[in-house]
Length: 334
Image 1 (cartoon, rainbow, N blue to C red):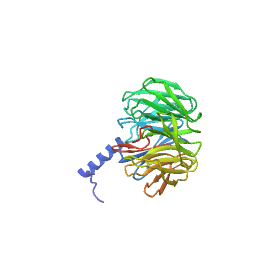
Image 2: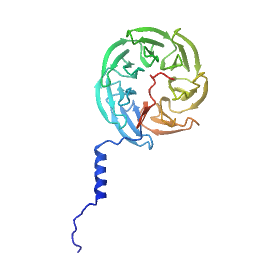
Image 3: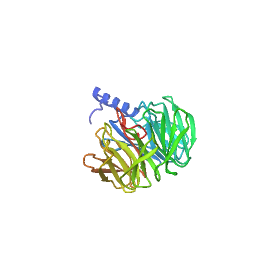
Image 4: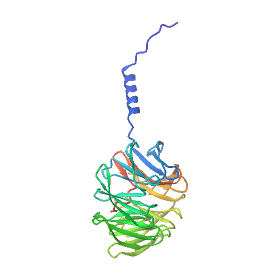
């Protein structure tokens, strides 16, 4: 029989154990995380951007749709519109830091100076304007705006916020100086996504097949650009790249030239593409609303890989270790 010898850990073994315990006690910040809002599952799915492995799945109460980073990038705000709740998340780890009661947060976006957060309430026919202190939200004005306030965009000077009204086919301009409506304009059936681009407003006409180009000075539809049925939302690429437009009915992503707004390419993307986030490599992370999947699209070739997520994925955001990029449609385009 061998004599009993007590185990004496080496220094390297002890160091490895210490590091493992430390890692378990503190969330690891991945090189990149992708946040997917599964509206039909009432979950927020957090994926590793490199391996696409699921890092977390955050349960919510009802129905999440859209999200936005705070101006300093420290917090990710996710609206649970069905539960009247806002979640504040560490974008680098996926840790939920707090939850706050807040009326029907559907679409949300910060003003260019980062001091105002506007929230559209699709179900309650209201637009809420909050002051952002850097830590908390303070409601300064609630506007009743029929029917179905949907998406929003700001003027570059931050003096006006523009809101699409799906139920009336209008867009409305609201002064952030007087906190009162300025004007409204009929733009077509079921207007959805809206961005500011080179002095014009571009609006996805979801009840039709085109983008409406609006001159905010003359308050008129300057022209329309035919893309595909169910024209929904617009996402400008960084550094003056193309504008990507999703069409949920015809399941297409259309590319617009950022200078002329001419259609340069169109990709068939099965599954009802909805929201897009763009990573530092230029790849498009796309929610496929009708398939319960996301797509990762190579912008050079249009080729796509897909991955199963939860039911009815809507908002999406690529968040890197040094910040985040992507689902910030309320920000002015270059």
